[in-house]
Length: 329
Image (tube, rainbow, N blue to C red; front, side, top):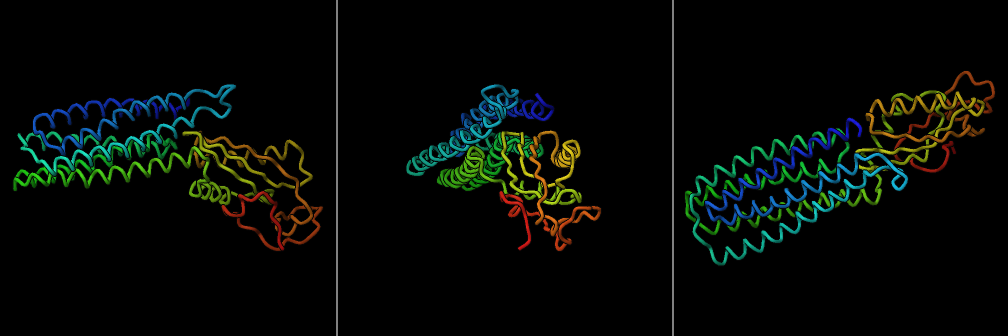
């Protein structure tokens, strides 16, 4: 287990423990108040508890070393975890809408509202802080499971704040129908968040190109580009949980020895890992330059040049992803 995956797993254990405690507090608040809005909050939070354990298991799997059956590791488990969490959020939103509509037709009395508001507000504060920590760590370590858990907890916080506001209105106005309206509004917010998490997880499962990440990688390499790197193409990135697998073709002078070409590859790898940390695996295939490469080659100490330098091609996501060596028309 690497330092990154160890940190992810340790934080997920803390998040799971926090969700269990907060769920108990929310159930207590509903028991004392009999509010459907608080019941909405508690029902939705059961998803947090379930997904917390699912996320914990997925991070455990993703931290396992690669083996014969999983040569790229087990990181895809994080995408499956996020997909399950997004699905559960959609289902919980539908359940909440059903309960709110029933209560709207047949409103019932709410008890000890002041005590319930205090309990629910406390859970919101704790929820937001832990969710913020999860998203921050998840983005730093490229962990979709942590990001999904953190965003879910943050969306819960916003929903809980709205519920607290709605309960405050009920407390001062005694308009019981507000209880159901608040539940309906935040059920829709929860479902939208669930859809976004599902969309991201499916993109990861299908190895959809991450344009933002590709742009960052290309800009990092461009900023430290060497004269021996005439061309780079066929770059691809696959995310396996917190691990990034990059492969590309690098065009170097044809007369370099194997050791010299390998040194250029090591330099590219060092630059990428410096920018993206230890959770990067880079596979580079070297190509020898062709006569048409001279026109885009900035190397000044070449004794076999066939053509004068004309123009340097700036690498972008569009041209570095193609499977063709670059040349001027």
